[in-house]
Length: 428
Image 1 (cartoon, rainbow, N blue to C red):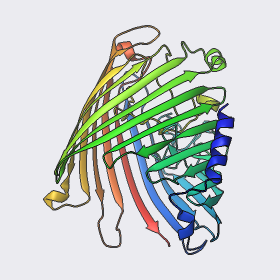
Image 2 (cartoon, rainbow, N blue to C red; image 1 turned 90 degrees about the vertical axis):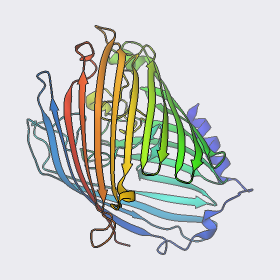
Image 3 (tube, one colour; image 1 turned 60 degrees about the vertical axis):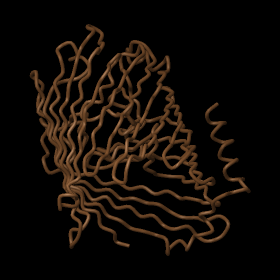
């Protein structure tokens, strides 16, 4: 049914004649609008686990090259996107690598992590008016399929995506992907995904109010729906209050439940965050709640082949209380207090600091009820503003996570440190 809907929407998009926008008419050409960028990334993650669990860490150097051509001129423009990825393992520890949540370099059959990784991909794209059809290797950023770029190398997916922006403020997306490239492994189908269909859109109703609605169907795994509403209340020149609501509903397929020994098949999770910005300061208060009978809670990301997971992107969790822990266990309720500071007001542009405290309770596992967890998150980031190293960023992030004994089946305690140095270079 979802395939039919995608086909109908695609035909409607491509046959639109009363377009309010026409990006293709502004095309300068295949070469003239092209760009080539390289991101040099040095990344390190260390997890000091508690309660007898072995510590894990990985460290690597990556080069991420992306090319995006312009579109040929004419009624239907044609273009090409491509990427090339390389990563060098700087730690190469059999004992410390292999943590599911780090996943820089996948372990081979010998138990050793790879010394290095290299892979690439390309996609062809067509544009009619302000509607683009892309086929091939892509990095989709949708609330029901969001590739993970928070580790050393990014994930990618192979398939077709149609994006339409014919009406000002309205974006419609429809797509089907049949292969997933794991961020820690080579090859186009290293994630085990059979297929995922995505459908939805977002609309900017006013300058202050925006909403989105999306759905996905991961073959033989689950169906997912997402809703978002975001409203910004202007208070003064440098003051505003933002209310942001995000919610997911997931329904696991019966066969997936049976094969993986899962209890229950449905989950609903939502978060509501209020952020007050006043000058360089931001204050956040958020609440998040998970309900349903699935012992997985809110399930997303991971790789089906060896983790019994979903395969819909490691960043497919547009929820307020997602740091090291996602606070997404069965029946979990969590509160967040957050603070951010922009140092540009104090004469240090490019420097920012964020801290958050999140506490979750009411966690249900197969053996207990009423479990808790809490996390203190800190992050400091600096972006070079000028000179030869302009746009180079250094990010230091830490989390202290403590999980009650009742919740040990769901999560584990530990201290985490992440150090990322990103240097983007625009070749042309």
